[in-house]
Image (cartoon, rainbow, N blue to C red; front, side, top):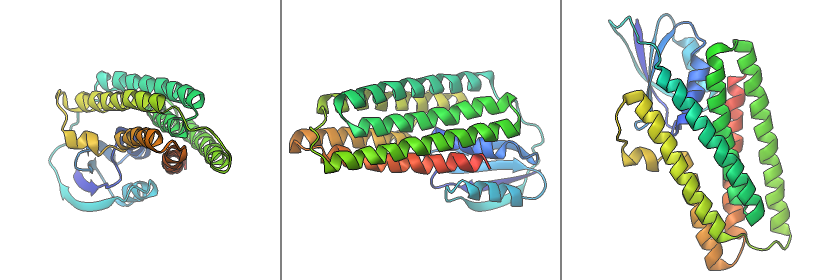
Length: 264
């Protein structure tokens, strides 16, 4: 048995951890995956050649770098806790609920930042749903669902970019900054809760370091929408909202292409 340590610089939130699980779990040589989100590291316990594992990691475009490979005497690994499955269901529900909330309030308040963040929530919900389905579904059906989710996400992001352009060229009223800020604060709390639940399910420890929270991509996006809301208040312009919306739509597109890599 061998264990290989990978540095994964772009693995900054739990949804990316689950993408890696979906990609590597079907490989028979892989026996256990041990993630450290705070340090952006992954330890893979495996048998046989490492080439397929490395190619699978590289396909996700997370900047993976192999640090070292060494032998280990460990041969037995505990089964995944049933609580892990319950936690995945919980974070899926939270993400999908906030997709609905942010999409609805974003459209009503004319905020493209909220609409874009709702799609980021939907993207995370897709990843958790695929992770849950992968436990019992066949590999072919899992890949088909991943492709469907990826293309659907791309379509929504492109529609979002088109709407940003239309509003930029038009004479739209500025969005309701109070709704932007209020809903984004709630979404930030929800993302923090998801991080806490997933971390606690793995380590059974109640605490979570602040550095892990504040470097999470999801938390940064929420903070960006809050700042955009404050800038809308200050400038009386919709431009800050359109800018943050464009950035988040770009991140959603990037996530969609990673999901498509799972479907290959």
